[in-house]
Image (cartoon, rainbow, N blue to C red):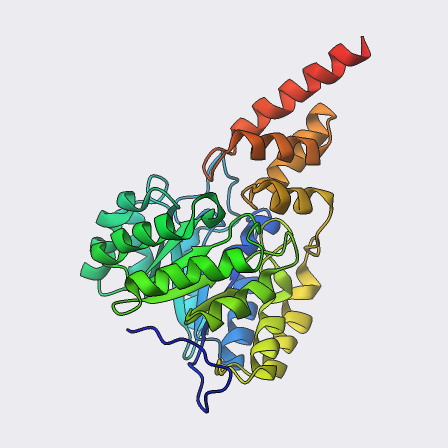
Length: 352
């Protein structure tokens, strides 16, 4: 695969492949309680609309169902199998975080019919993904790398990390705005750096969050810089304030003349008629989510912070601000409790 930059004046701008993450990133917002019926309904709606890739796993990926991250209502492999059974043309993707998910988990997902492996690491730790990319390639899976919390390092360093993933077997590498903290030019610069570094050998993707309400804008800017794979989620269902809404994403791209192959009306129908009725909460940029974007906090920390806030009677946004100052990364959810306890002690001391 080779990258091609979007040129607004070109007669045939590069086609964008949309990956929908409702059934993976949306798992965070649903407290990982997706049912098989819900998975089938979402996959049917997305597949009918022409979405090419649909991601299905626990919010923290294969093996994420645990005490620390939250238990899934239904086993990942069973949900993947249901998704594969429901899809007629869409590929089913799974996410794996090395150190949490294993090659064995990946093999089970592949045996259930998943064909795209998305391997995610912190933006400075691409080297821990190499054995997983090799294993996925050996299994005949398409490979996609995720460099999470991409705002934490500059464009050149991020590009060097992308190079590690591509040399290790990644066919696409994503700039992942896990905190929704990238502001316009920040997203542009990172995507451009990756395209320059690996664009002749692999595609570049972008995954945005709505914590500062810039997911769609950043996705458009990413496409303008040469990103060929863009993520969304129906109804913005995802961690924090949610992901770039798939239905808005494809409508925006169509208005700009950027082809996605997705039927806009079909995507809107899937959002309105399938996802919206089962939402436990509609993702939005409230004080906690905005704090995540402002302070650069991993979006999946929101529900953990809200639970800790209720338990220890301290504001969730104050917890998230402290987490951002401490520089916590994905996988350190358990340390949110430590922050909440410290704030509670400070509150008690101030009162007494």
